[in-house]
Image 1 (cartoon, rainbow, N blue to C red):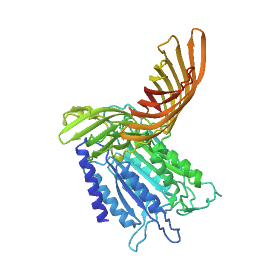
Image 2: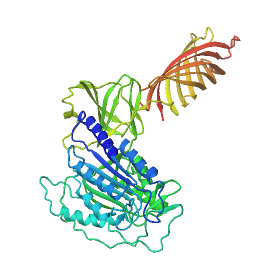
Image 3: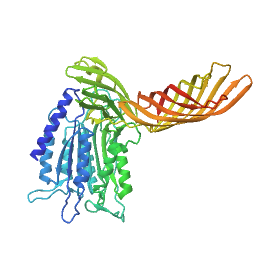
Image 4: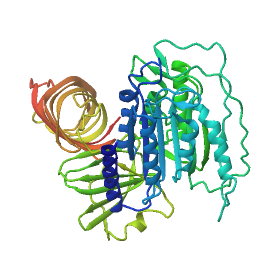
Length: 560
């Protein structure tokens, strides 16, 4: 435990250092995760409580959601109580923890958590947990209890919370009513059967009665001041999937955190969305029922849904801070290489700091696409950028950004409309032709096109040519969004000569080598500069068949 606590303090100091150079008054997050594989007596061993529940939860909270995490693995009640005391002391110091999360995976009954038993240790009761949870000096408190009968915590927490709130008074404006929901838990239906391939985490539940809570005494607050508590717990049996090695509800909760719970597709995941998503999935898989207690004011975005990305070129280095809505991302780029940083989509600001120089620029991160940063932006004094970057009263979550090497792939589908000039034909019909074509390429490997050319030879008629072409090529990335296509072309069509006597036609055939340069301006639009050299075969009356052909074209291209 002392080693774990020192690691926690070291990690927490690191995030504070980053934030001191970024912006003050951020949403600091702390999580306490407790998991036990063994229960009491003959209860089945939950082999995935650590590897399948606690460790994945710890990773995503640390790496994606900016939590400092304290874990208790197969601990006794005494160990958990000591951790409770340290957590309570930490929350009383500055900088203040604004968001706290408690998670438990293991066995339980209607009164106690089934932690590791020792001779001189009394079990940890729900009442003791509720006293600890409600005493924490955090603006937002969340509890996730994936254990049998753990919803028995809810009536005790609801009554104590309403008693605490009854003496509160509000100063200042009251622009939005308090949003409170208390779901009264119902008794379980008799005869419900356990599903196969799952282990029940505790004893069978017989339910409990209703508890009345007077919500009229709770004060209204503004929508922006998100605060309060939520407790999510299992109403009856909780289940552990032996085949997958993870608890049923926890596994779906983690899927929701990775983006599956964003039901309204706004790029932000709330606890309401997480609960609704995981509850339905767990009920469908094993029949597990979940309930929750909500005393919460305003709206709080718990997790981002990464639907965009920021591509930073090699020439830009330094400390990068990106702010998008309720989330801020920090990344220190030291190497001169192209990196890609997953982001949420929407309007934002990018701040770059190199030693004592700072730059600022607005961003619009597109959904399901990448955004290239091609310059540092507008240089601003480092001491004054906060006035242009943060708004008074905002609470942003500072998340550690993940910079991954940029490996651009050839686009699957590219369409283009090109114009240009060609020269072909045998003397004395050799002339420049105007070229217009529509093309489609699959993965830049195979392309097909419909081409039209018209020219005015140094005689008294025009020549019209209509082709269908095939262009195989090999794409080579030169640098960043610049691609080179090396290949060839083969085209077959018809040539029409318009004279005073009428129209005459003949077939025409051509082939040769092609070279094209694709420059992508963003993830959808780009420009293509192409050239080709080859041989054209068109039968003439004087017996000449082959002639040299070359052409240049410029095309806007769209990938989809």
